Amino acid sequence: MRYDNVIDAIGHTPLVRLRAGEDRGVRVFAKLELQNLYGMKDRVGREVILAARASGELAEGAPVVESSSGTMALGLALVGRSLGHPVHIVTDPRTDPITSAKLRALGCQVHVVDRMTSHGWQSARLERLETLMRDLPGAFWPQQYSTPNNPLAYRALADELLDDLGELDVLVGSVGSGGSLCGTARQLRKKLPELRTVGVDCVGSVLFGQPDAPGRLQSGLGNSLQPRNLDHTAVDDVHWLNDREAFSAARELAAREQIFAGNTSGSVYRVLSHLARSRPPGTTVVGILPDRGDRYHDSVYDDAYWDAHEVSELAARSAPEPVADGAVVSAWSTRPWAPGEEDVA
Image (cartoon, rainbow, N blue to C red):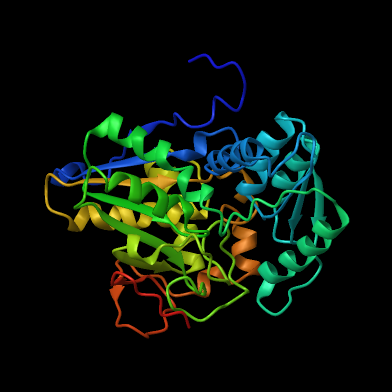
């Protein structure tokens, strides 16, 4: 398909049926958002920058500043640099060398904080960002965790699913800023009010009432702060996976489905596989796979990394354990999430 520029090429990602569920008549599909030029958040980069330019909030040639350790940074770099804006990314030492190299190659200024503050790496990055905003007059901060243009960016993803499938029963997605899962679900429910939405989080993330554990190894999902774009009313069920379970699932996704992806996609795949075994025949389940595996070659896919971080010492479950409200989880667990529930620990 032909496009006149890289911005127009964002989206239009493949929807691939997985082998999981074939033996039971459950249709399981993966929406390969990892096939965007840099990843799923290319969609958000396009939405927020074009909206800010249209409203006048972002002037021609003015800087764009954001806190990100991964694909949001790359999405902003893709769109911002294409339109002639300086892009400043505040990140932390967890950012992988491949992402850092891409950002610098695209012409971004990368600012790395050297230590955590009160709420982990996230708060340290935001403090540095505030300093940059003072030093760069006219700078635009997209605020991925609170801007409504984050979830709005995923209306197109929902429409692509409807065009391809007509209808679906369950949507599974990882949760970090809350934009992708909540934005996609809200758009789908305009035509599919009975859609069930499953959020995938990591052990040690505060998003669904768990205590914070800043030392968790997973990236791309989870959070140490509550983002405004996480609409708890859009989520019906929550699954938490620990680092070992997420990493193992990414390896399984590559071996069984030939999709080389990151730990976030792996976590979604683990939940998809469970639903393929437990949902009734005739059910259609879609999972959003946001991240390619390249940036995880020396962590998720590296046995030496597993040994150094004692990943194999963590518990690993073959199925989720149902837990009650208030229970602290350490391995794959699940519970229904009541509408409006926001019991932050």
